Image (cartoon, rainbow, N blue to C red):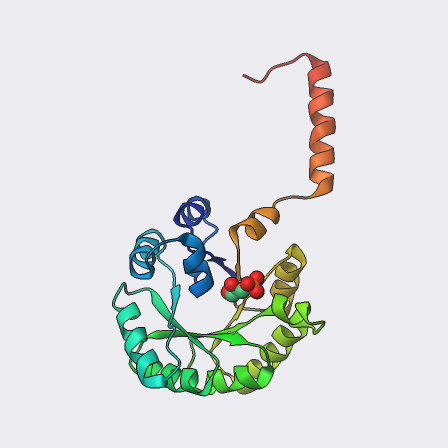
Length: 217
Ligand code: G3P
């Protein structure tokens, strides 16, 4: 499973990228706001750090305007994936830009039927939002599983990009289900390295080592 990092924080992206943890980046208007940066400038900077797909999201509501925005975003760098919302106009935009040979990430997906439409419109990525479904007492992971089965049943090559990942368990379950990609904030990716028994074990090793009175260096 590839790891995308869900942020427009350039320093955080660079840190994870240096560790080989970043196969791509996803951004959205909320993350651009959080960064305090200009969308064109920060996206260009991210594309200079990461060689994998970098999703940049359109904000227009009508297909004609989304297409124009998408083309402008795609001009930033070759690894841009234009992110469009899962609306009828977003699907029209997806079809046009995919036919142009651009990568398209269809976002804000909350149902298997929406994912089916995105695949038929030629999406490179479909972004089902797990955490936001869990927030309203639905099962986000079940959606990932349903989409996996439907895409496999019919041989769609649209990649499942599990989004709105909030927990380590989301990551494990997505990997078990067979999501192609997961995108998570830097803090969630870093938290994957932690385990209470690792901390406990290390504490004991440190105490025992001190008692040996030895040094390695
Ligand atoms: O990639 C989508 C993601 O940013 C949404 O996450 O936690 O805001 O639901 P969240």
